[in-house]
Length: 298
Image (cartoon, rainbow, N blue to C red; front, side):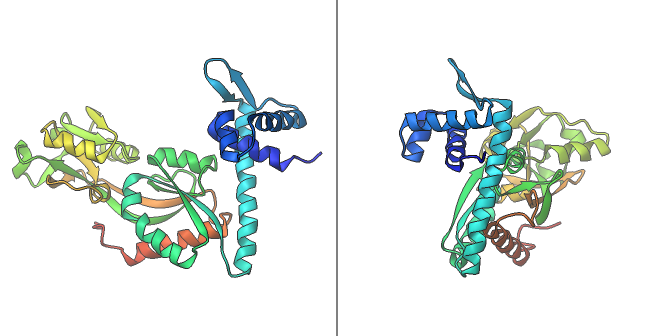
């Protein structure tokens, strides 16, 4: 017996919202119709997709989580079929789901989206913002078609966009103001980190130099890091690329040991992405080449 595709789509919406009411609103159908579709899908597959918990509401079962990933893959394939047909008719359409961290959204996406839209006005773009680690998970479970993340790229296929490096920022009142570089070993008890997916790179480099990686103070955003440094609470360590996306009047210093990282695009497979996603990646890659050096490659 074949799977009822409509029931599968309704299941996906419920799984995304984890709420029957919200799913029914999004689908413009009644709540009983949503519940019936999910129940029919469970019956046809002879499995439980959700656990209905009194306190936590709907929860996906383990097999429900697996089915959701496969359903997303089916949706991607369906989207790809339509996009290939549209491309054949010289009228590319569909949607591209992009995962990006905030600095990349600010520095890379506006120009990319503007150029892409000028070429393919019928393609819509949906942006999901998070940390590099979150984006890798979104690519893994097919929530997004492609992700813009920092190295390491794990087991994903990737294209390098930007060569980046870490810098230190200090206030004008900090004792190290007259020093040319900030030495990690000397100031390791004053370091303030900003989470951004570069923790693995920092830890690896410091290990190579036998320097302890101490998380004395860790913040979530570049703006918070800047405010902490302004209050003279320590020395901020942040990527040059991320720093270029926010305004500040702090002093920038090189660090020792030098820490480089790479920003790139990841997917499960560049050969398997939809035509629209492939074109979006092509536009972004070309712009990155054209702008190479503007971010201060070292």
